[in-house]
Length: 84
View 1 (cartoon, rainbow, N blue to C red):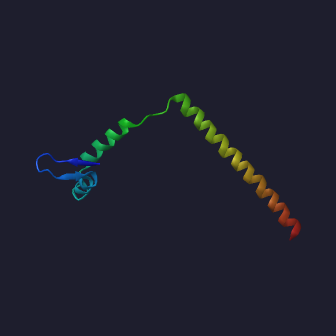
View 2: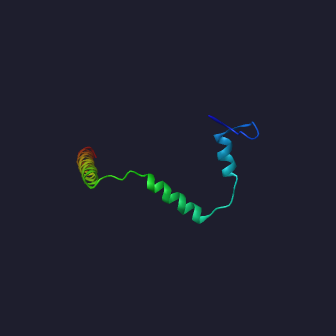
């Protein structure tokens, strides 16, 4: 969507604003840290209970997957020893 400049009567798109900012090649650590802090303020952090339950689910799934891969590997190892 275009923004209209009331002074000159020209329409300025969001991409022009972004490209104008991108063409500024100076880098400021202070601006970077300020922007980082602002973005971290927008993060919705999980509750302790949600973190624990989701971590347990991940650990369980990884354990089950590793066990399944282990048994499949043992089966194919056994089968290949019988053939060769």
